[in-house]
Length: 261
Image (cartoon, one colour):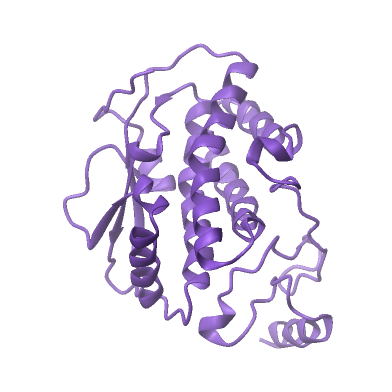
């Protein structure tokens, strides 16, 4: 399938997912995702990104990257749910780092070819497209990063499991009932109806048990730990309240402090 770049791209793609319909005119650096399969390119990228977020080691920017990259992954879910034609190849995605006024770390912007001209797909067709994206785009990147910095791929997948549903929920708000159903069905499919071997894993990478914890802001609203740690504590020397690595007694202290504030 040949994707056609169009200037009529839905502004929601940029406003919500930071996906551009045209190349960025001003940026600090740009990378083609395929280049991150090479150790030299990967080291350069993670080192530069790590500098902006005061990371003492490369594993922290790797986790932050997986979380930020989840915005593009959510875009693919959204585009497929709407029946858009798009290029999901590694070589077809350019990632820009664009500094923002008053923000220390660079913003990620994604430039890829897609068109709003929809195709009539069955649920099975959507699932095939979505799984193919994960297999030939996300899996190779996560394997390359995990191998290079010495972490489990599961740590990276945890960031996807945490962030993608958030953007999917935001996308649902102004969509038709059909697209809402497609988004829900596709996320259920990729997380519960696929097999570990589909992702070249021994255990399913999108299956986590998040622990229920007290909500210091609203006692009636459910709150859970994150799937995996983002390693932000390495730069700030403190865990966030939802960190799965935090000990219960420390979380109790945080809870009381939040309630007092």
